[in-house]
Amino acid sequence: MKTVSFNLSCLAGVLMASLASPASGYIIPTEKELRLLPPYCIKTAVISKHYGREQAPTGHDDETKQFISIYGRNFWNMHHYCFGLMHLNRAYGAKNREEKGANLGQAIKEFDYVLNGADAEFVLLPEIHTNKGTVLMMQKNHGAAVGEFSKAIALKPDYPQPYGQLSDYYEQNKKKDMALQILEQGLAHNPEARQLLKRYKRLGGKKVFTAQPVPVETKPIPKEEVNPGAIAAEVSPNSVPSVPSLPQTTSTPPGHQQERKTNPYCRFCP
Image (cartoon, rainbow, N blue to C red; front, top):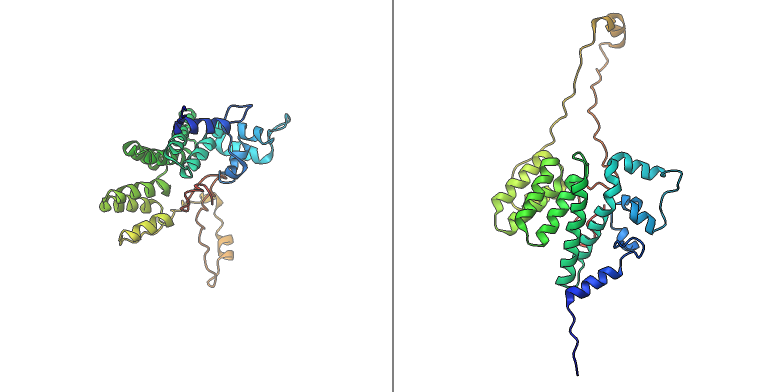
């Protein structure tokens, strides 16, 4: 009697191929997986078409227009980033080494596709470099991972995720001093980053980090615009001069990560 042996890596490949969209050839996230991805993913080109959300010939809806205004022309490639996040999530939930490896490899390809075609000022570059570094760490390619985290920090020094990843790496390698140094660097740029503060205190960090006041630019009033009588009428001995309010920080763009809670099966939940 003949016996049939199965190669697990081939089986993983067949499984991934079976989940591809017949029309596009892409591996499309399931509805459950889609709920774990950033909200813009359902509006990206291939995914929106698969779920019957493609735009009408008359133009884009308001939500899509908002995403386009934030991400620019990069938005047309962002379905690849969403695919990469999907494969990263699948790698976290993989049942065997072959399945995990296949998903990590595909995630790198999807991230690189976006990075290679992105504008230099693309707002999601720090996040994509950080997630690529996460995948490389899972592949045991530590040197390349550190490089990706460093790129993310250079692009956005107050973005906490790459500092956290680097500190975890150094801590795991018994380099506590380097881990603390990285955390101090991150907290100097973002003193309110809870995930960094938690790591810092756990490692015995003693420094206190406070947010630096935002300087308020004051411009001298041209002489011809000064009206002493009006000023005297408005300011009485009992009044308190108003203090210029600090500029308000802009809110995080939809789908853009700021801080991430630890959840290996939901990397992008709020």
